[in-house]
Image (cartoon, rainbow, N blue to C red; front, side, top):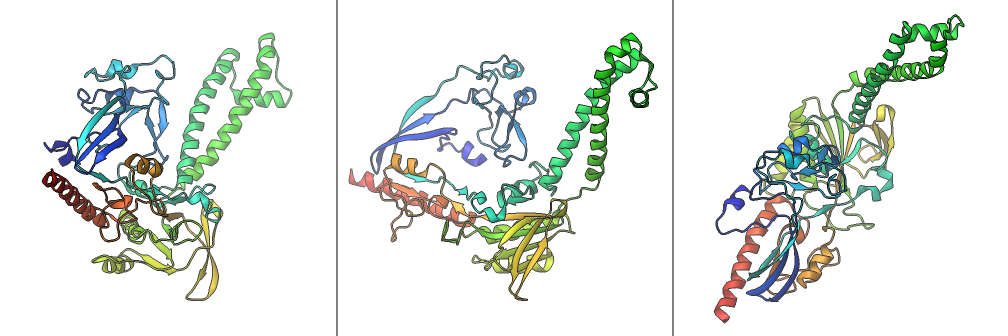
Length: 451
């Protein structure tokens, strides 16, 4: 990405959207909407000072909702251009509240709340569509209980957990355990406030809250006029504090026993090779699961992984050897089985119910964490993009191409690559991108010769 940002022949229009395309191959007019960042990209140095002082936390979609970002943010650290944007749906200024602290803190004077959108027209000879993909929503398969069991996550969520810049800093802490620690931290803050309130009563009446409650329950409390006024309120706060303190003690014991996930299950073909959703194979899921299992073992050598699938499709060069190495060196077990159901077990452990085809019997097996390898789905809004470009989609929602020229869409001069074409892995996407660029050059040269 850095090379793209620095290349003299590439104009990078980030945070922009194609709104219209007219003309023919070699002579298109593209209308592009440059959205308002409310941060001047030419002035912004990407220092992050505005992020540090922003008071508004927002769920971070880049980390799949397992962490928070601020209302002024960058999508991820290595993004090009290295600048920020303001989320108007959550920023206090755009919600009519008093704030603007980011503008005061920015030494580059890059914050501009009055910035507006801009539409520009570009003359282009060809178009390459590389929209990427969306992951299938596993909540559509209720038997896997993705929405109800904290420790059932998607492969994309697990990818963020493995990242040093992710929500767990690369440690395999389970979502349920992270919730436990967050609840403990919140309860500690609540108790600190409660203790201050009780301290005022204790100072005023010269006794501890514990002794006050004992005297109150044993009817040995000598009620002065001041104490009689405060007794009911003090007793309520003292009892509530004790109840929460007992809860904190129990949470602390559980939190102290928390470790990283040691036993992990990967379930393949979640939404793909399934006539209810997508009948095709998504292509990269098997190798992605193996890669994640190997990295998990590198993080903690006690980690064991089981990969459940109808088969393992390792079709690329060296892929089969990689699969075998994972089994031999990274404690990966490959189980030929279609998991029927996931239920809740002890300690929030997901319990898999599946058929062991080797032993020909039904097995119930608990795991610390379950990772769902979800299908590769067309990007949301693909139909709108196709309508804008004037091209067709196939029956699955990907861009339709010519069988003899697999990168050519139904409109001359418009080409596709990567998962805009169909599900595929990174090496194949990169190869297709080079091919699509070559086809675009051919279209432009052909147009120039004709003119």
